[in-house]
Length: 326
Image 1 (cartoon, rainbow, N blue to C red):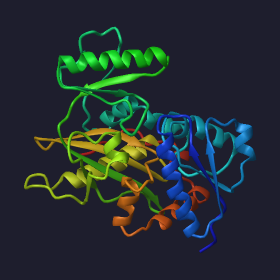
Image 2: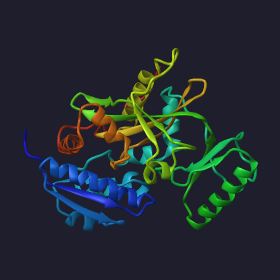
Image 3: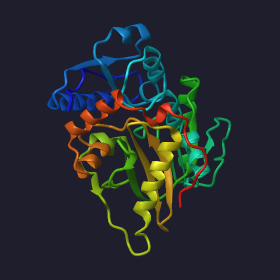
Image 4: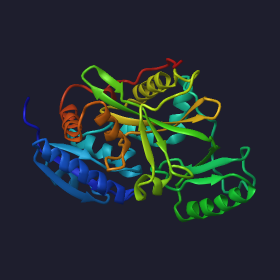
């Protein structure tokens, strides 16, 4: 096998997940060094195209989470420079970062997802039946998540979100029904044969929801690889794996993504969102799934770099139209 090219690992970014990105990038850089690659680690904010062009490395591994680094702008610049990079291209990244656009696409594919609407500060009354969840349309890691179980919860969220929108013009929030049940995630990895599903993982917080603190600040969340299902639900893993791959293909994802679902108390699965650059920290689910599938962290990162400089990837082709998931 040919030696790995030199890799520019980008970290940080201007978004709310800056600190998480630093942790992820450190893990990726260490793994690539273990795989034998020359690694250049650079912490960025919002660089210009000219600044990116001057940075070393034959392949770019942008380990950033959030609108700028994961949602299209950085990918636009890398594509304009013609530099090979790990992760989805700008078009797929931009669509997947938009939770409402992703839900609309999923619905077209026959993937079940709850109806949602854009949050309007002028709506003193919740536009959907309570309980609901209010969250940013274009953020990850449960940043800005508000759980509204009753009218008082809606009033608190309405005030906080309205103030945040006023302070950050252009920031959008969404409202969707709250689903109580099991949180499940399916990683999707591009291999020689195309996009394939990784082992499903169930996320079991000690209490409450899987929020930012449960993801990165605490060590009491349990992660169950290939979780068990009761009689009558044995089909769930295959359904969600097929749904994750179908959604990734339709988005035009390349190399990797993670798709999150909730399984309600009646056994009905509901799509939450897709992430085109999942976390790579010690708590992160995507590398956990690849390890369960027999691919260690250093092998995963080396594989992604090789994919970036290798054959044509899905995001360089026209995404498929139509199709459904049973």
